Length: 276
Image 1 (cartoon, helix red, strand yellow):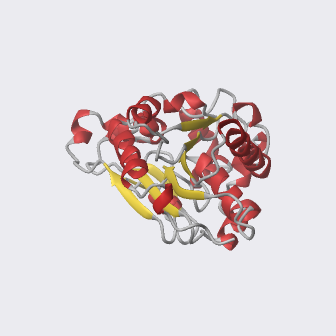
Image 2: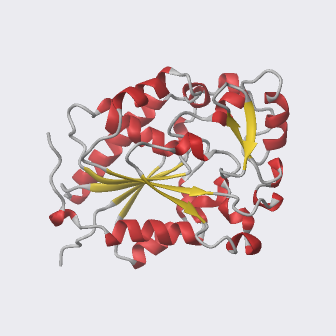
Image 3: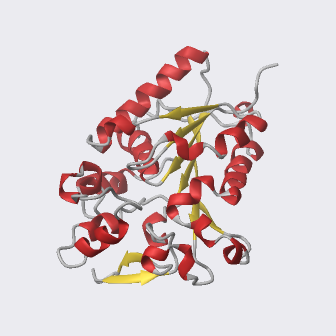
């Protein structure tokens, strides 16, 4: 019997690795959802466009290997979402040759990254980097040498290109966010449970509406359906750290939500073909 599920393409984030999917992958297998895991760990010194093109090549290669020609779903963590969006909206936006049914972004910095900007702040940056050393960035981290961080500062050309391209009406966008609904410091102890964000006037503030690394304001995307977790704030009393940015892809509630997105939506046969 032909499997009715769309294959799910898994795209990890900045300075991450495919191992972040080690909770999601077996759940997808149990739900009979085939998945392809894109590994761009060897490209961390390259830019958004290069990684997006590599993702495109990877999807094409998997299509050839499997003989599958229908739509795919793409599940991304953090900056991986912006890599996928750059492929779909900027590089393929006019042609629409990439047949994608659903794009799921877990903690994505869709509007540029406040943290990337903060890393470059001459006054606050060094202390923030010191606190995150060994937790989110390597020791002796220099943001000036990090191509992706520079490309995802909110006023960068890359973010401007995504903003100008806009989302595609042939793709269903879903966003999954973590939030410190109870204001507990254990959520992300590095910043006492808060997340740095940029004020409308360009100043800095901290908020509980974020996952410790990405504030919700960075993630909002017009037309995207969004889920803020935990659904039950009581979960933060038990495992607050499971809802911070770094742990979101392995969070059981996130894993279950992504599984439901991929399995409860209409299958390929019921989907309206994309406009070419």
